[in-house]
Image (cartoon, rainbow, N blue to C red; front, side, top):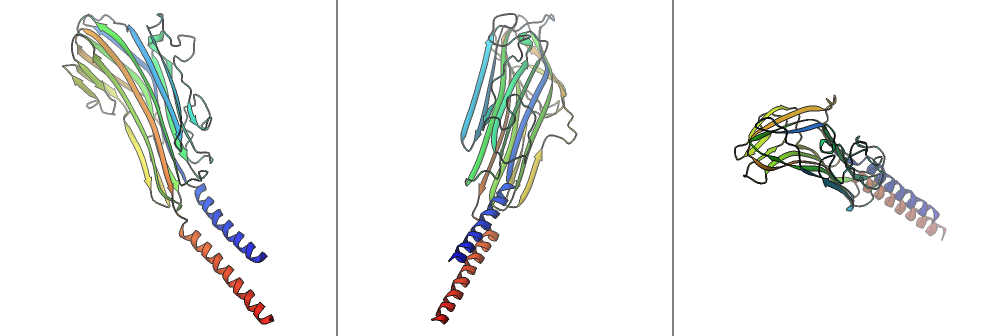
Length: 350
C-alpha cells in the first residue's frame, strides 16, 4: 500500500509540476505610453494681437484592473489662467495636476509617476496599471505645457484560474476658452514621444491569448458662439491627412513626425511567441509637430486636448496537454501492474 501511495503521489506531483512549469512561461503583456512636452498654443486676431484664454479645465482618469478587480483614480481642476484664481497647482507648486496611479495590485510597476515600461516577462506578479500627470501648463503661468501618461498590463504563470485579464485606461485632457474679436488663427506646436508594445510568450497550456495596446491624441477647436466652425487635428505621421475641418476653417500642417493615433496587437494559439511594437529599436525620442488653423470667425471658442492610452491582455487556460495526460496514464498503468503482481504473489503464497 505504501508503494501504491508513493507511485500515485509521484505521478500527481509530476503532472502538477508540468502544469506549473508551462504556466511559468505564459506571459501576456501590453503597454502604451504617450508623452507631450513644449506644447504651445498661440491665439491671434486678424491684427496679430494675442488673445489669452479666459477659463480652463484639466481632467484626468487613471484606471487599472486585474481579473475584473478595478482601481479608478480621478482628478480635475479649473479656473482662470495664472495669476487668476484656480484650483490647480501653479509655478513652484510642482505638477499642475497629478492624480494617483491606478494599480492592481498596488505598487506592481514601481508606484506613482513611473513612466518607464516595465516590459514583458519580468517576475510572476500579474498587474494592471495606469497613470497620468500634467507637469506644466502655460495656462498656469508656464511658457509651455507638458503631460505624461502610461497604461501597462501583464498576466502570467502566477494566475491559477482558468482565465486572466487586465485592462487599463489612462486618459488626459484639458480645455480652455478664448474670444476672437475679429477673424483669427491658432498656431499649435509641441513635441511628442509615443510608444506601443504587445507581446505574447506562452506554452501549450494556453489555448488562446490576446495582447493589445492603443493610443489616441486629438486636438479639437469648436466655435461656441458666433457660428458653427470646427476643426480636428489628429497627428498621424502625414502632413496631408491629420486635419478635419468644418465651416471654412483653414488647416496647414507643417510638421507631423509620428502617428499618435494607432494600435498594435498580438494573438496566439498554443506554443507561440508573438510581439508587436511601435517603439523602434533606436527610439528617436521626442519628435516635432506643428499646425496652424486659420480663418476662424469672431466669437467664443473652446480648445481641447484629449489623449488616451490603453493596454488589454487576456489568456485562457485549457485542459491538460497531451504530454501531461500521457504521464498520468503511464502512472495509472504502473499502479495497475504493481497491484496485479502483488495479487499473484498473494495467490501463490496461498
